[in-house]
Length: 352
Ligand code: NAD
Ligand code: UD1
Image (tube, rainbow, N blue to C red; front, side, top):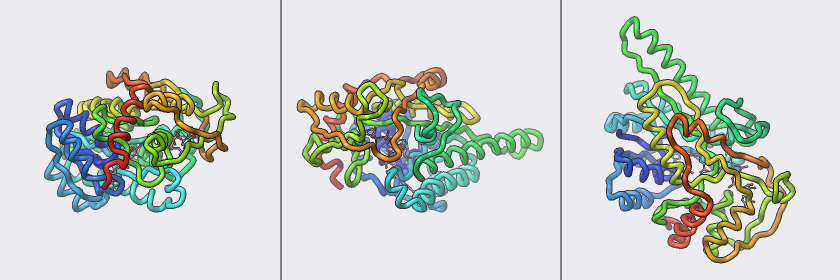
């Protein structure tokens, strides 16, 4: 199939591009490089020995988007493009709602014009909110989000679900009058905590500024770009007192997208699917595993809890296995090994 990846130069998009190309699919990318670099795409081409049709454009620019989609006419769109920094979304909510919602609306409008029907969306476990108890299953009611970023994911899920429902009704009606309306296929992927890097160490996570997330922070600490790690709270009701998360290797996640895109192109309707491992690890588990991977213990101190953190978050990963025939195969040892390979080989990231 031909897949079009919005935001494909970013962290998860670039790893998914590798997995799609290696599975024999064609890949085109639209990215405005707001939070990424063209170097990531060059490296994906180097890893795979295959070409990517790269378009530098804002997905919310409907005229450009129409031109690109008309040229590519992809079998499936994987929609990664979006702003994702939780703290920044609290300071700049309007920018977050504008960018994240507009990109999705523009895609839906242009897809309808061109008769394109298949879309996979990057959602987040954050939509389970604070009140659900893990392991999270896809049929749990969505919760209240703790920040505007989370709400944009919540809302985009709703927009895509409503658009799919309307398309199904229109398609059913056109069965009688024959105007050929096409039913959408929507797959909403809820990621848990994507971490690690491609096994080659050539591509990886390259956050701008001081990382907010645990694993990129530890990686930068290990190459001397940060001074020490603060563990946000050790008084939670967990075995070692620190929060537990479902850390998933980004290449497992990428391979999940290959299966999800194939599923999306072959079905109609809306499916919500968790992409996680189903295994929780604590902050201190990750600190220890990274120290073992890089050969020296990670320096840390215990600090206060971070506002907005939930104690526990992990997936029930059964639906992905059942529907997509996919499950994560890499553990925290591989995660830390590959994150270290990327960061030690590229201490300043892509450096652009
Ligand atoms: P990323 O920032 O590395 O990638 C997003 C890409 O989208 C970037 O390359 C950016 O330049 C591009 N982009 C943003 N707005 C755009 C626009 N209007 N037009 C064109 N390109 C645009 O982030 P990522 O970690 O790869 O995340 C990908 C998706 O997955 C995002 O939607 C994110 O919210 C979601 N997600 C990420 C995580 C995570 O932990 N990384 C967890 C859950 C969900
Ligand atoms: C965060 C976001 C979530 C988003 C996800 C993307 C918040 C509240 N949540 O989730 O919405 O979908 O990133 O991956 O920001 N930690 C430390 N010290 C640090 C950094 C983190 O102790 O310097 C701890 C955190 O308290 C948490 C764990 O490490 O317990 C993981 O944190 P992080 O990587 O930021 O991910 P989440 O909080 O799960």
